[in-house]
Length: 78
Image (cartoon, rainbow, N blue to C red; front, side):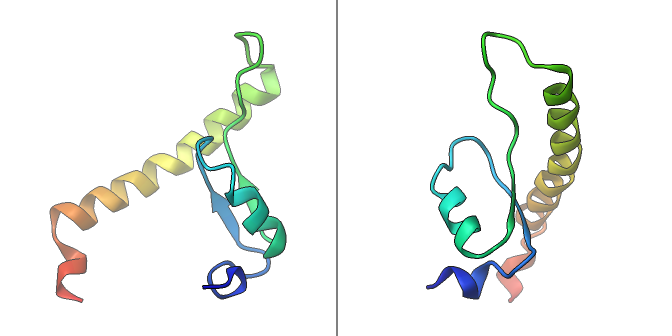
């Protein structure tokens, strides 16, 4: 499957630090990659703290959505 079929131009992709290969896919698809910052020297800068918080505040809703899909077996009916 090609990236262009999955990731469209302008899409925002939320990924964790453990997916380094997604950077290439996002660049090829002209989309925006949103990843939490990586800890350097044991401390985050003030900007990185704000960025981490904003990513986490969106991520919690996505994780809750996936949990409900599993709990209520929503995808089993499709």
